[in-house]
Length: 202
Image (cartoon, rainbow, N blue to C red; front, top):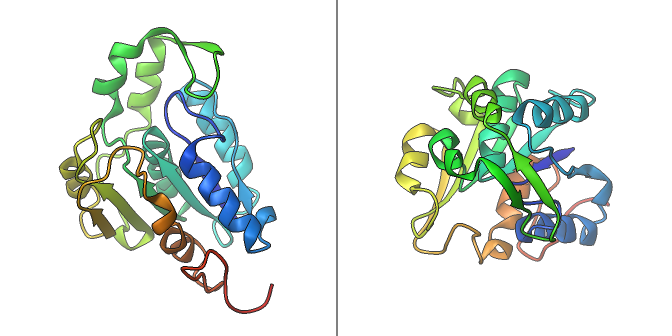
């Protein structure tokens, strides 16, 4: 199973989440994907993620996290001992999200939600100062990320497998080029190909 965690103000309708969903559906593995809408509260988001993940971890689970979802994925991977792919992950979201305290909207609708000040403390409680098993991680970082500094990502995930994209942006607009590499790390026994499908048995 793959648990996909979206970023701040995002949703399962985000670009990268949809690319993953479409690839897995095309390969006949749509049932292997869990992609929940995460609550604004980091504490509540991780309670939901743990509820979903613990049914499969650690033998049959990998996590993919984008931006803030990458921060969450790191905490979960350390707690559960599972593989994780980080897509332009937030290393220290406390400094970035302080400015977003208050009422805001999601990227994919006009729906509003409140990001409360106490959520900053909830984020602090989830911070992983140093990853313990770099071999469990795969970092995909873009040097052209306009929101987060890829150098912070590379330093935080030292020793992990990584794919540093020259240029691109925070959204990783070329993500369809990399999705099979991501899925192959999550499901190494499946045999994902660059055609958006897989080899072996369906």
